[in-house]
Amino acid sequence: MSLRRLSAFLAFAAALAVLAHAQPTPKTTLLALSKQDHTLSIVDPATLNVIARIPVGDDPHEVVASEDGRTAYVSNYGFGAFHTLAQIDLVGQKPLTPIDLGALRGPHGLTFVQGKVWFTAEAAKAIGSYNPATGKIDWIMGIGQNRTHMIYVLPDAKRILTTNVNSATVTILDKTEGPAHMPPPGSPSGMPPPPGAPGAAPHGPPPSPPGGDWNETVIPVGRGSEGFDVSPDGKEAWVANAQDGTISIVDLAAKQVVATLAANVPGANRLKFTPDGKLVLVSPGSALVVLDAATRKVVKRLDNVHASGGIQMQPDGARAYAACGRDGYVAVIDLKTMEMIGHVDVAGPDGLAWAVQR
Image (cartoon, rainbow, N blue to C red; front, side, top):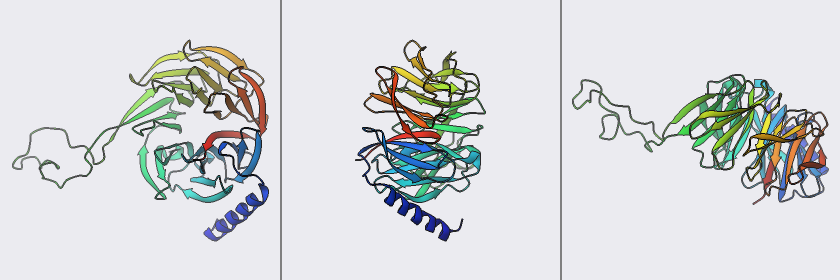
């Protein structure tokens, strides 16, 4: 599509969005993607009404909101056929110009940390970050695993986890410190002189790169490792293994699997802790499975909730939301009674996010 045609399409889509909505976006909003209609639904969580549906481009899979709750970002996946992130003005309820990721094809997993959008690029076997303030991709890291699908960035952005579906692994990246800049070669704090030169040391490690480096640990888990979450205390990562129907628990200090749970969740593609860290919800498609995080046992299977995609927690811990693709809605779960208490109609729902305007 030419730039002129793309601009005309965006203008038309924005006009349709303005005409379609009659209510302002709530300060607190549930965001729900439709893979079938290629739209993002802005949902009022108080009434469960869809306020607006905004076009987001081809094959949308995951969505995340900015820290100020005013912008949403959507990955256009296509198993590597696409290379864009859609941008949505949540206040104006309209699409913005997509972000072209270039060779970073197949974006999927998303998170927003430290003012940046962090994403996986599955077909490029890499991850990266996009800075909205500069409008540029400011960091790329090769993972070297097959189908790097989901991403989790800790609040200080010094530790990153990914799941790698076809490699059956989890990658942990840890930031190391380094000089703010690289001094000239031969300077007292710079690169050492070449071997044999006056003052050259016979041995010794090379200096750290400017800005530091990343140490990578690759941890084997189960087959089809995809949906995962980090416990609220930051001590464990729980990984749903879709092909094995198991859950791997990774001790993040030891960087190793400490338990594999026979949770009977074949096909599971999302997993989420409740905000208090006491329960873990998993979406295998056939039901919504609930585990006790302390005992590591399944405590409930909601057979009437055919959770097959995204799971989102309400920050106050009152409700969970689960995308039910085959039923065409997002189920609303009361986290006290662990029962479905309502739903939001979304065609082919998948990625979910929470946005709070500040």
